[in-house]
Amino acid sequence: MNGILLISTATIVMLVVLAVLVGIVILLYFLGKKAQKREAQQQEQIDAMKQTVSMLIIDKKRMKIKESGLPQAVIDQTPKMMRWTKLPIVKAKVGPQVMSLVCDDKIFDNVPVKKEVKATVSGIYITSVKGIHGPITQSGGGKKKGKFKQFVERMQEKAGAKPVK
Image (cartoon, rainbow, N blue to C red; front, side, top):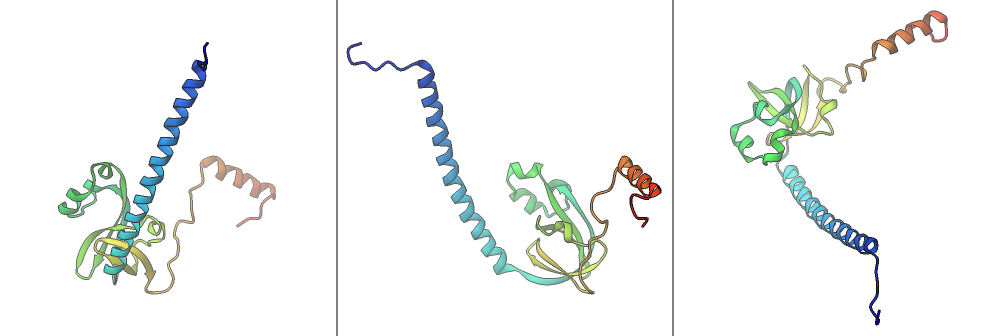
């Protein structure tokens, strides 16, 4: 024990785990900054190439990129990991041509089906949608109610606890 510091095994393990966690946090910080720069650069390119087009929305679905009907060159350029994820795909008639386009995730739920819209498009990417004949209205009214919820509402209406529609 001549000046040698005795440290328990648990303390050594905790210090190693702490060092690994600090290393991971630092790595994630720099990867996050790099991803933010890349995203800002891509947004600049999208804004530079955007144009407004009127189109008739035929259908919209979330599909894997191989099933989407996009050009083969686009499918080949996507990273391997992205090929398994589902993308918001909109099938629209632009002029005389029917095309499959990728929609922005933020506006996918607001895209009306079987209506004519003015869309801001950058390549094959839809960034925003506006209605030509008035505002865009949401159809469907949200989530569907389950059988039990419908039953409870009917019983409340019959009992007078809830106003009849």
